[in-house]
Image (cartoon, rainbow, N blue to C red; front, side, top):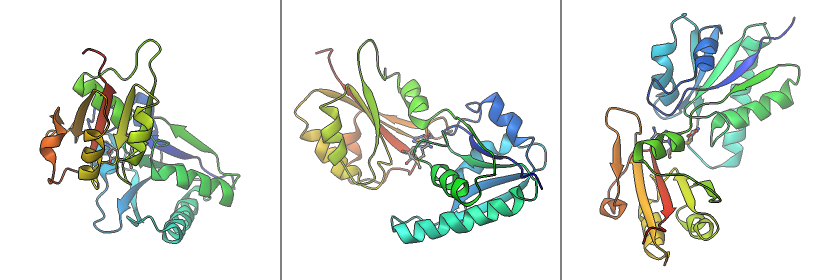
Amino acid sequence: MKPGTLYGVGVGPGDPELITLKAMRVLNQVEVIFAAASSKNEYSLALENAKSHMLNGAVVVKLSFPMTREQEALERAWEENAHRILEFVQKGKDAAFITIGDPLTYSTFGYMMQTIQEMAPEVPVHVIPGVTSYQAATAAAHEIVAAQEETFCVISGSKGGEQLKEMINKVDCVVMLKVYRHLDNILDTLEDLGIQVRVTLVSRCGMEDQVICNNPQELRGKKVPYLSLMIVKKDKRQ
Ligand SMILES: C[S@@+](CC[C@H](N)C(=O)[O-])C[C@H]1O[C@@H](n2cnc3c(N)ncnc32)[C@H](O)[C@@H]1O
C-alpha cells in the first residue's frame, strides 16, 4: 500500500493568528494530528495554539516525550512515537505532527523526522515552516534583529549563560530560547559582559498574559514561564 504523507507543521508561537495558510490547510486535510505532550501532564502547547484552526474532526493523538536530557530515554521515546505515527501513515493515512513555532527550530519534530526517515525511508515527509518564537518576540518588543551588515544568532539557554558570553562577542544580536531554568545564571553572565547591551525578556509572547520586561535583572530569584526568551542586542546608540 502507498503510505500517507507525514507533515511536520509549525503552528506559530502562541498568537492563533500567527499560523500560516498552508499550516491551516494541512491541519484540515490530514486524518490524524499528533501533538507532543510532556510525559508529566499530557498538556500540549502546540495543540492549544492550533485547536481553533482544526475544524475538520481529525483524530488527535498525544505523544508523550520525557522532559529529560538522558539520551537513551529520549531515543526510546523517539522510536516508540515513530512507531505510533507509522502505524497510521503506513496504512495510507496522511498525518500531521504539530509543533510550536517552527518545526525545525529547537523542536522534537527534528528528531522525529530523522527517526522516521531512518525507519521508513519510503514515507514522504513534508515540513511546513512556522513563525518562530523569536520572530514574534522581537516584533512585540520592537527590537531590530539585524540591519545592514549586522549578524545575529539564536541559542539555547538550557545550560545557562556560557554560550551567551561566547556569542555576544561575535554577533550583534543574540536571541536565547529556554531561559526559564537557569535565569539567574544568565543574569549573572549579562552583568559580567563588559559591553553595552539592551536586554529584553519576553514571556508567553502573543498570548493574553504576554509580558515584555526591559530590565530582566528585576526578575532575579523569580520563576519565569517555560515560554520565555531573551533578546540581547549590542547597544550602539550610546
Ligand atoms: C522547545 S523550544 C521551541 C521553539 C519553537 N520551535 C520556535 O520555533 O520558536 C521552546 C522555547 O521556545 C521559546 N518560546 C516558544 N514560544 C514562545 C512564546 N510564545 N513566548 C516566548 N517564548 C517562546 C521559549 O524560549 C521556550 O522555552
